[in-house]
Length: 234
Image 1 (cartoon, one colour):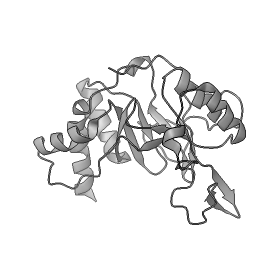
Image 2 (cartoon, rainbow, N blue to C red; image 1 turned 180 degrees about the horizontal axis):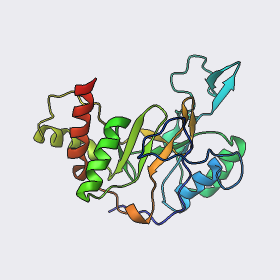
Image 3 (cartoon, helix red, strand yellow; image 1 turned 60 degrees about the horizontal axis):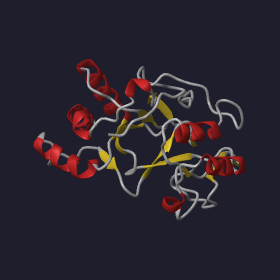
Image 4 (cartoon, helix red, strand yellow; image 1 turned 60 degrees about the vertical axis):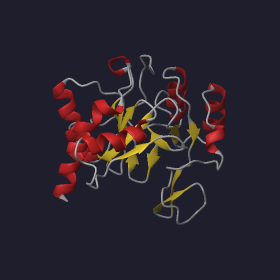
């Protein structure tokens, strides 16, 4: 079973509007205790997670752009800086120093399908599902939120096949839920990285309180229910 040691988690940045489940935190600075390099090193040294270098979100001529150079980039600051990022992903502190000393504002990417997978749901559904889990006393692992109003629930690897089977068993097999499993070959943008909408934030940071990653079956029922409500209300 995957474990995560206690950590002084990377900060979550302030947003204009936040859910009660997502309290605001300071934005990262290029240097100091809240830098992206500090956060990257904490993921490597405290959590034993591999990381990959992302692109930067740039403000150019009054609009947001991506450091990749594509003027029409659909995800500024939220994709790998290297085409072969899966091979380059590393758990070595020296690599983090190399990358973020050269690009202090580059996003931190966490490869999925290795130490963990991620359930990706709409923020409204995620907040409802999280509240139901915590009332029921369920084991909840790390949870993050993005400025694009998505929430990431970290679970044990190899959840994709289980998710399909479990949704069918729960009666959601024919419902188009906005719920995805990010596994092998994919990644998520980690806090406190910046995208045009703001900073990715921890809702429930990795630490002693959630050092055991839950299995997908421990979270899927409340998340599927919440996603079902979210779909019905749209």
